[in-house]
Amino acid sequence: MIASSRGRYAPAHLGELGALLPPELVDAVLEEHGGRHSRLRDLPSRCGVYFVLTMCLFPEVGYRLVWRKLTAALGSLPMVDPTAKALRDLRRRIGVAPMRALYETVAGPLAQPSTPGVRHGRYRTVSFDGCSAIRLPDSGANRAAFGRHGGWPMLRLMTLVETGTRALIGSCFGPPSEGEAAYARRLLHLLTPDMLVLWDKGFDGNDFLAETCATGAKVLGRLKSNRITPVLARLDDGSYLSRLGTVAVRVIEARITVTCADKTTFTGSYRLITTLTDPRHHPASTLVSLYHERWEHESAYYALRHTLMNSRVLRSKDPTGVEQEMWATLTLYQLLRTAMVDAVETRPGTDPDRAAFTVALQTARDQLILAAPATGGLGRACEIGRRILDALLPARRPRISTRKVKSTTVRYAERLNDGRPDRSTTVTRLTAEILPPPEHSEYPETTTDERTLPRASPQRRSEKIISFLRSEPDRTWSAKELSRRLGDITVQSIYRQLSRLADRGLIIKTGPAAYTLPTSLTAAEIP
Image (tube, rainbow, N blue to C red):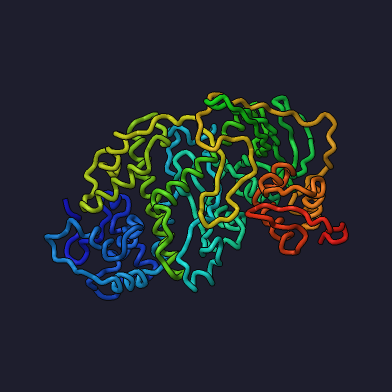
């Protein structure tokens, strides 16, 4: 089957995904945002939009090969053979605004109220999280706009995700120099009173919490261990009422014990805060289990960065091209998620978790090369839906492993040993113990944001390291051993601190990551 458009518009298709992004919508967006051509060209603007989307569907090939894939099944029709420069000029003519508008048109929650795994009571579960590992070409324009981190210009992406389907509700991005909370504030207008927001401890600032609650949405998030909260009232389920800034919250402290298939066990402590303050309707144990849904956001980023983008550096060498390419990639991701949810909802009771993103992506690529539009059946993208349902994943198995920095450009790739297995291991038992608040609370009557508390100075950290080295002055220590012995300094932090001390001549570097203390050092010489 070939695309329904003819002549110059024949390449304006996206295979089966075109049913989710019809040409009429593309034309309307181009008309509204000034990207429409003023005269009929051999490469119309509508074709340009689909070319940019196809370019993101095949990130491993150049412009001309992308065009050949787009026109592979149109050989019987008269077709232009543009140069790479002509296709680059086509991208510039379209610009950024139409691609962003297309993304904002398709973005949004996808689940129905009856879709399994997407709600807690009457609340739709969503989450905020950022990703700072999207690498850009090392051009002067990209370095100037985004800075350089780990050897590459990097882009920070912030998304609001529907955790049950991993669909994008909203996105924004820019240089990593701006913090995650600042980017998340740009998406607060997308929250509604029927949403429960899950977030990690990087978003627990008083101001951000107050702004989120002002939208009417509820919150369930992690709290940093050094946040100080008053115990205002103890509740029957072991949680307690408190206050963060101007917001009344409920605090849940829990100890998680995990037993793995290899008989190893480890424990971890979590402190959660929530604006769901009624323990009868929202027991603490239920909320502790629910918070695990936040990890669906990490799965969404894995599908976006590693499966769709194939872990590749973006191809655009200027900030305008980067912005256009990112909006196109996010649009394509959302179209694939839409096709997946459409498919699983034809089989009532199927959790969207079981739909394989890789199957959807590879089928969409095949159908584009065949120029095959959807013909009805399983959702709006029938062949994609068929293959998804034929290859449903089994119910998720509980597994765990330590988190690792995998980028080869990151120097400090080790983490403080937390007892987790190095490789993914099946969990055979998991228990959550709700810890009661202290009987005699020493908390103040008002809460304090840890961002306002004084931080340990480099001098104090230096004193601690050097004091430990003095305990065995004739021994050489590795950075990993020092981190393990000191207990509260991660390997990443201690590498930096040891490097600074060695540069100042306060310690001696005897080998790779190996240090000892000069015998002549006095306390007055510690910086």
